[in-house]
Amino acid sequence: MSDATPESLFKKYAEEGHRVFKDFSVTESHEMAMQFANSWNTIMTRAIDSPEEWFKSVSGFYHDQFRAWMNMFNPSAEPVVEHEPGDRRFAADEWSESPLHNYLKQSYLLSSRWLTGMISESTLDETSKAKCDFYTRQFIDAMSPSNFALTNPEVLRETLDSKGQNLVKGLENLMQDIDKGRISMTDENAFELGKNLATTPGSVVFENEMIQLIHFKPMTETVNERPVLIVPPCINKYYILDLSEHNSYVRYCLEQGNNVFIISWRNPDESLGDKTWDDYLDEGTIPAIDVVRKITKAKKINGVAWCIGGTLLATTMAVLAAKRKKPFATATFFTTLLDFSDPGELGVFIDESQVKQHEHKLAEGGVMPGKQLATTFTMLRANDLVWNYVVNNYMKGKTPPPFDILYWNGDSTNMTSAMYTWYLREMYLENKLAKPNAIELCGVPVDLGKIDCPIYCLSAIDDHIAPWKTTFISTELLKGDMQFVLAASGHVAGVINPASKNKRNFWANGELGKGADHWLETAENVPGSWWSHWDEWLKAQGGKEVSAENQYGDEKFPELEPAPGSFVLARAV
Image (tube, rainbow, N blue to C red; front, side, top):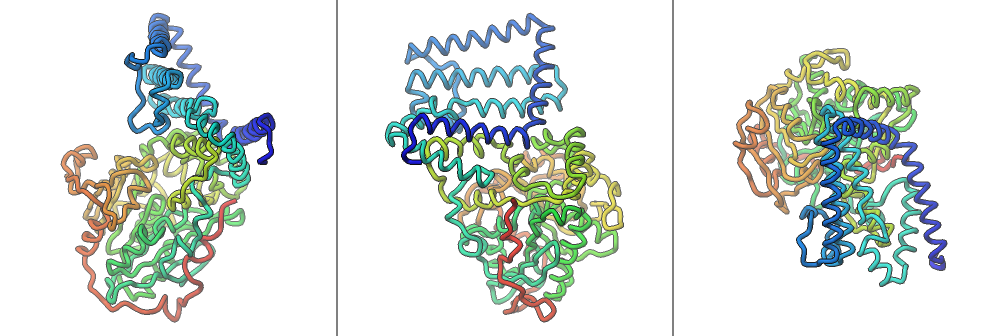
């Protein structure tokens, strides 16, 4: 590879790039292309029907473009348009100081503004407008001059300094990522589960076809008599809550005097494709609850869950309540949707047409590949999670730095076809979970209003997967004493905010019952991590201190294998 000529190198780039985008178009982008084309066809047709408005829009656009062109010959001229202060694509000095690159930047930003403006001013209905805006921004992001080697000043500088070796190394990185089927967002060689991730001492004490239950070693002499059972998302691996020692939520819970258990979900293969939401309760959450109570002899336990894990926990609690069982003293939900009326940008992927496509495709069973799910979430932040790494890895030829959260993010898991299609239709598309007794699980109707234990509901203000104003609706659906807290940052960083670092901020103690906006207006802005706030809340809910046991499990549920267990090691293919 190091002996490659420039001609052969660029030919190889072209071949592999064509392969990547060909595969992407087949597996991911058919619906995007159709929605994009249909929406813009409608916009242009209606624009032509109003020629005066169309002429005014086009004239303004070309006037601004001409001004930007003329400014290239006048370095002291005020820019026609500026990029957002936090836009890292244009952080290099050349984007402002080089007349050519400054013009390329401004021309791109003007085009972007014109396209998005056309959508916002169009007569499309709000749903179509939102979809068109999303897919157009995907196109806009892809076409940024920062994404092309010949127009990115940092790449040009790197190429000159290294005599093209960055492109050679970049091609090697590209080939490796093609083999892996995903873009590398971190140095994956820097991490190993059980070595420097998921290292909190513990043991698997229960296992069935769907889960391993891990019991962690207590870190205090006494513990709350009510153990903590953590239900992580089944579409991600549990160790997001047990990353490195300095940012492990599991370790923090143990240090605060809790007896902690966590579910490690099986990464399903084709043989488990017929497993339903019922099965995730009957063979997942419910047996985990039973085992935790038997091992600890606890009458009540404290539940903690994240994202779809929270939806699983809530449906479990409602099912048990319908059967006159209430084993939870408290429940904590992190960034959890229970009402799906507004799923935010994820909604562009969920309509009757697209859900039917998934149902048809997965009718024979099997799994929804984790890599495909990961691509969907990645598209929501394409500049940060796609193009940033395309430039860094393939054009600059660099290896991204080690980052434990991004390693976890790339360690995707599958979903069973039966559960995935049911979840899309019953919850996202028809929002039945928010309606009392509209769905039946495990043989009983589900009513979230029967969940009446104290609730800690955490959301994140910049969450693009579970929008906080939608998660706020949970305060109206659940009947227990409610503590709603809003963390700074997004879906993951908002949750993983260690108390030891005490960064960022959160909002708490707003007035409930008058909507999300009123709650935020009346809430207190608190500096630092919400972890300590949650710990104070949990301790206030009661439970006496008892001596911590020195063993994992008990005679009936002995140690099966050390944490992190074997289930978490299985990678999606």
